[in-house]
Amino acid sequence: MEWSADGFPAFFAAAPRIRMHDPLAQFLGAARGGVIDYAYADAVRLAGHSCPTVAAAFLMTRAALAALFGNELPQRGNVRVEMRDAAQEGVAGVIANVASLVTGATTEAGFKGIGGRFDRRRLLAYGEPIEGQIRFTRLDTGAAVVVAAKLDKIPADPRLSDLLKRSLGGDAAAMRLLHEVWQERVRRLVIDHCDDPEVIHVHGGG
Image (cartoon, rainbow, N blue to C red; front, side, top):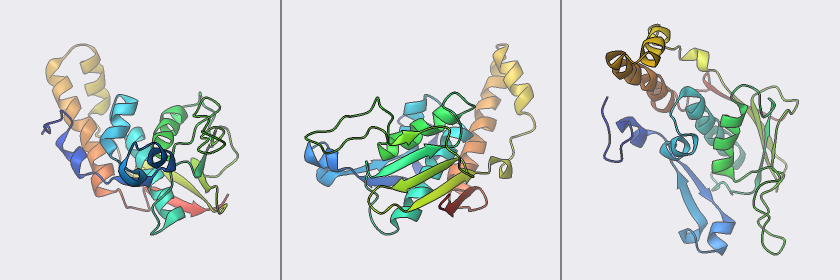
């Protein structure tokens, strides 16, 4: 596997980024003009690992924001995120954490705001009756989109199950190959299929 100077797989640098405007960051001087770029590596730092779920969460968030804001710079804190699955179900928590990283949406545990502004609480919910995986809603306009990742369109390497078992057993050679096989699927997702509507599906509303 080819590694970059920052210690991540080299392909991370080629993955698309998400540019946001955060009024809170602008207000407190945390970012010039409040503009923050989120890279796939940021999602990996948050999750502690790189996998198809983390990659799909990042791409679903990117696609939803593009659909909602068009040519406008998406505004962090101006988006409600609703998950179909319960917080403890499957990988819902992992996906929600990535969406929260980019959008700022949180549950009751989030930032309370300053002087009645910049409140990020109650913008993230689980167990909502939606047809996709996540619904993103603009607070200012009420426009909403639902997104879902079709990861079966990018099947795992048939050797994966065996490599996982051998790696867990301490087989160093299997682990090296596991790195290649595992991250190659992620690479295909974030590079080859990042704009593929058959993989990252967006539809309006409900």
